[in-house]
Length: 268
Image (cartoon, rainbow, N blue to C red):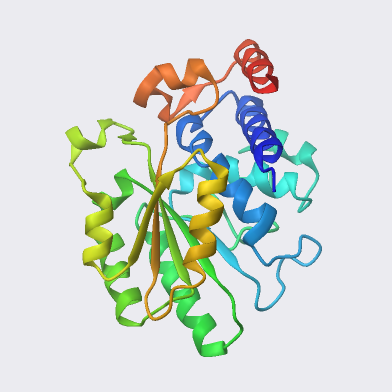
C-alpha cells in the first residue's frame, strides 16, 4: 500500500488547520503524520459513519498538543467536513486545541496533562479484555512525556495485566518545549526503558510508512505482553523551514505566507 499521498494530505490539512488560528503546535503534529496515515489507512478497525461503534479500535493522543494532526487525519478519512478544520480553537468550535471526546467525532479520549493519556489507554485496553470485544488500543506519547512518572505507572500496570491488545508509540523527535530532551531530562535509552518495564519493543524510522506498517503488523502477533514502537522522528518534519527551527517549532506562528510556502513544498 502506498501511504505517502495520505501522509502529505495530513500534513497539508494540519498546517491549514493551525494557520486558521495563526499559531499552534506545529512540530509535534508534523512528526506523527506517518503513523497516523498508516494507522487509519490500514490498521484501525473503525467506521467514520459510526464513530462510536462498540468494539472499535481506539487511538489516544496522550501528547494532547498534537490534536490538530489527529483532526486533520479524521477529516481526511471522512469523520467530518474538512472545512471544520478552519475553526480550530475558536468560540463554539468542535475542534479545541487539545482533543475533547465530547466535542469531536472520532476522538476516543480527551487529552489532559502530559502522562494522563497513556493511563486512559491502559484502562481502555483492560476494558476491551474484560468485554472480549477484540479491540486494539493505540496510544501516542511524546518523548519528553516519558519524563512523567505517570507514564511508567501505566506501563507497569499494562505489563502486569498482560495487555497484548495495547500498543504505545513514542514520538522520539528528541525535542520538547524547553529544548532537547537530553538536556532537559535525559530519557535515553527509551527502548531499553520500555523493554525493562515488560514491553515488546521495536524501533523504526518514524517517517518510513512501510517500516511503521511492518511494526504494527508484528505488534498484532505479540502475545502476553504490551508493545512499544519507538518512532525515531524529526520535529516539524516535512517542511524545511519548520525543521530548521529546532525545538522553537514546538509552538509557532503560521502566517498565510508561511502556509502558502509550506503547502507548495508539500506538493513536490
